[in-house]
Length: 291
Image: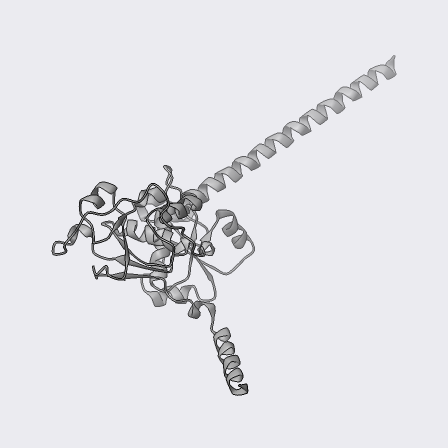
């Protein structure tokens, strides 16, 4: 018994010494296989396309339900309810299918943030699957079929305010701007987060640039930011996605500027009132003194 106890203690010490990044298994991968036997399949295209032809056993879960009309990420309480409405609990191995790569990566990223245990992204588009026997996809239920109960990975999201604080404190960061050049609208130096760079393509180069640093990624809005998060996770790179991307960064920046401007105007007005009151009091006292 003593020997067994010592062996158990040694095992615990070995596992405790494994760095968190090495101990955490990769959650997202890409696959070309259409074998759906051991997967929970979701089709992220529009409902009419999913119902017309999809993989065997697929549930229809359009990617746009995870976004608000302005392109911001929907509330997670609603997201988790939607996942339960297609029968997910978080323990399944989900196969994300569809046509658009970015849309598939985005939904995979949402599943990752929600805590889904394993996610595979079907690399080929459903429209290109000419030799596969496609069937009608099933719409999600109007009520929740299962309770999604996985532990969220919300640590993979970062708020604009949190990022600003990290930058101001001089924290070691590798900030990657994954937006297309079209969305920059002018000079790079004026239309990006200070210190951010375009990410290299190769995994080794990403790791070399980010060694000993927290990796932050951002796109135009939530969709491409979270899609990039899924892409990085598929390369076994732990990163944080900036919530609502560049749009959210600028929105909070403008809000902060407007707030500062309001405060400046308010205090200027208050100073003017105080000075005016002091002058009126002074002249009244002067007039009384002359009398």
